[in-house]
Image 1: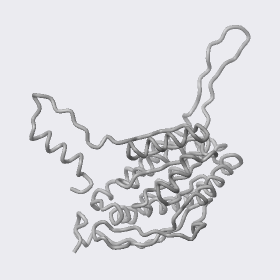
Image 2 (image 1 turned 90 degrees about the horizontal axis):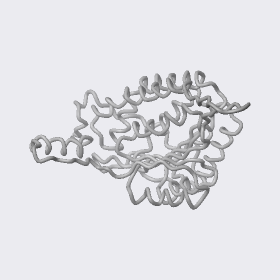
Image 3 (image 1 turned 135 degrees about the horizontal axis):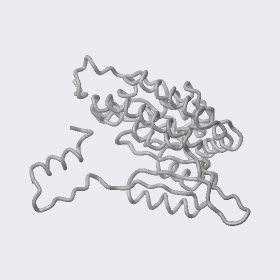
Image 4 (image 1 turned 30 degrees about the horizontal axis):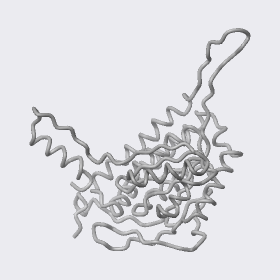
Length: 296
């Protein structure tokens, strides 16, 4: 019997519905036909085989995102229009919360009560940025003479997101919610250990009304799919969360290609500064909590 953090009567193994790449609003096989296994870390057993995205699949996803940005409705919608779709997406997240929580439990080894807790948090993150979507504006600047000066805030373009495995659903929306609210289009590579919830919420995004090509999800590996995102000439920004070593590679690839903008969240695993007058027992408890929260 597997301990999921709650009684077996409350945990229900999910039905795996989406295992292919999500490109331009459709689930498709990888161009190479390759697949890889996603493993349940609680048992070591194979959950399902996932289509493996490589450079060619990233190229296809970026082409869809570029077309959606250059000619599609999403960047040209008002903030209010984008917000309505994002709120609908948040509602669908909550309606499918138990299945999403179960997906992260079986892939990331997270305790079920923690993944359940993350569902409303993910939905609320979408709602928060939906509320910001119509408040992105510039400023009118004072100028001398017969001049009118102002700043205009615009979406940067196509964004590449590369996320880690530890809290899959929350990491997905940490990246996607602000960029989609701003009117960007994107290609997201989930960690190869945890692609299932990302594919499921991409399906929910389409049901909510997110236009085809705005959100593309390509599972794969860092040296292939991740590297292709970092160095792609048609991606305007890349956002990465992970190790310092890989972050250096992402920054180097971004600079060596089209000098795309880069956001990096690196390292920082449970740092503590303990002063001389600290309660060491409490500090030890907090250190343990910070390091092993997902496996408590």
